[in-house]
Amino acid sequence: SQQGEEDPQALSIQEGENATMNCSYKTSINNLQWYRQNSGRGLVHLILIRSNEREKHSGRLRVTLDTSKKSSSLLITASRAADTASYFCATSSSDSWGKLQFGAGTQVVVTP
Amino acid sequence: DSGVTQTPKHLITATGQRVTLRCSPRSGDLSVYWYQQSLDQGLQFLIQYYNGEERAKGNILERFSAQQFPDLHSELNLSSLELGDSALYFCASSPGTETQYFGPGTRLLVL
Image (tube, rainbow over all chains, first blue to last red; front, side, top):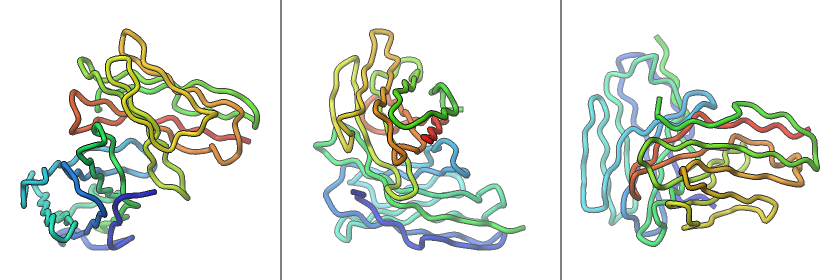
């Protein structure tokens, strides 16, 4: 079973626009991570936010975490064609020894 | 490049057969994780090893087994393969219990 659910399932935007995707999860977490996957290839770690953090930035990425609502959002600003990929949130809970539970992912297509 | 290597990249085999997938973690990482990605199940955690010892088990079938060797590389053994075992199998490694670095995956096709 999957811990997280991403919304939307798919997103199509033009270069320069912002892309926002959301992730909801069910149980208490230690941290939440976002990964990117380009068409069936390996997952690339984007950013990690701990349960005691509310917002984090990395380059064009901004992640928020609301533990009271059990939700997180990933914002990609000024998107580029190279951002076309699937984005997954993954949660790690305190009793999990670091194992990650992934959501179903959001497929993002950025057109030039 | 994450520093995690997996071999082979692709595997095509028949039902009932047995295969071994290999993973070399990033230098210094003691934890190795195995995940399965399929169209119907998404990304599922299979098993975790830390410094040679099994630490956590997820949705791993009894037909599947894994181990981590003294040099920290890991192998995932899949036996009595079924059509439904066709998937991408990822290995990841981490220095602790936070950020995991994923390998490129092994694409398994069972015919």
